[in-house]
Image (cartoon, rainbow, N blue to C red; front, top):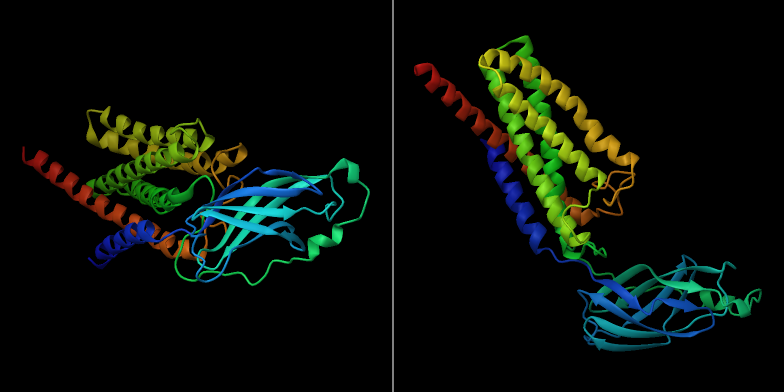
Length: 351
């Protein structure tokens, strides 16, 4: 009973914490976002979850960062609203490394909002008329970034494009972890059935397979909702979407195979064999093949669930309990499904 209560508690915790924890401030875009060296450059910065008009604790500061050692600070800043400010920079006449182009990170530090970052937000080009000169290179080192107002407390990272939908991490990704654990349990009971063909082993294999398919469908649906927000449409024929659909179709064929025999024992035996082969295709379809092709999903060449760029310590406080909670809930529902199948068999025997 304790693990059932734990599953409910963790899922409720993930739902509440995942929805109410605020996001860190961020910068959505800069306009204009192209500059040449030697220019007096003015750009409008659109903030997210920022409070630029609150000057009670001090004024904002803005930098354009070329690399860890080179940055320039804004010479003038004009706050237009809570989420919009205008920054002016005197861009040095030369890039610090002698290249002809590059990208500048934009960092806004505000006492009330904290630190907001726009990675590679502005493209910079070397003015060819000044090419070869070394005048102005030292200006990149005169205004180093420092004394930032880093806000403490629980907050999720801000990421462009996905914004608030980052919260779906606690619902979409755990579905795949639960799916894997449920299909592992299913194939274990299929193997047990082949070694010891009892109704109990067969019912548990069926119940956990059903729950695995259910969580797979939920994972696919939550992914489509997320894709519609981030990519503009729910289905983009992305390799991971396609492979997930194929994997679920393979498991749906398991139930068709079982029901195609008049003799339940024969259907159960062949279904157990099929379940083993279906599980053998699951890992390649979901985790190997998608990494062999370009994908819209983040972390296509790594594990996005554990990448430091996609998951910070605050998110881990919700993400890992969410995995445990949804997985335990899946096994609880699977157990209830097993009991239901046992009652159906009992009634069939009475008839």
